[in-house]
Amino acid sequence: MHPFRAFARLFFVSLFAAPVAAQTSGKDAMNATPCTARDVTLKPGAGNGNFNGMGHSGTYVILTNSSRYACSVPGLPQLTFLDANGPVKTEADLPGARFMHPGPQVLPIVLQPKQSITTGARWVDGPVFQDNLCYKLTGVTLALREGGAHMALTGQMCGERSRGVHYDLQRYGKTSGH
Image (tube, rainbow, N blue to C red; front, side, top):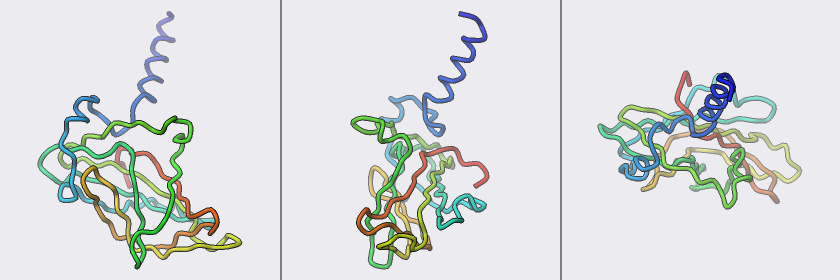
């Protein structure tokens, strides 16, 4: 094989083979102690308007291991949005997930002490449907393997009553400038 082709193949395989945030082997990820709500902090990311406009809103969610030891989180973010009455019924649309049968199989991510990863969610925030279903958000909970971590969040999330409220969810990535 031509040296350039070998380099290009290696480059693209390494670029797309694993989640950006996962820097450990599968064995390490499976054996790491699961992060608990006491081990992590959640905070919103600035986003600089990345989500807002044309009837949409959203947020980045920055997850940081605030403990003194490494721990693991599920490889795919699972968010539960809350209003004044508790959890609201929403459904995440994760790009590429519908092509993974029987579903996405993603290893847990090991977070070193003080390491952060980010996910993002984007949703319709206005009553733009014929039969609207809207929630006034008060917070979001990120599921961990044992419990969940919580973050305050304000805004409105809407959907078509007959189809439910959907939001676009991003896979975890490294935190940079959020």
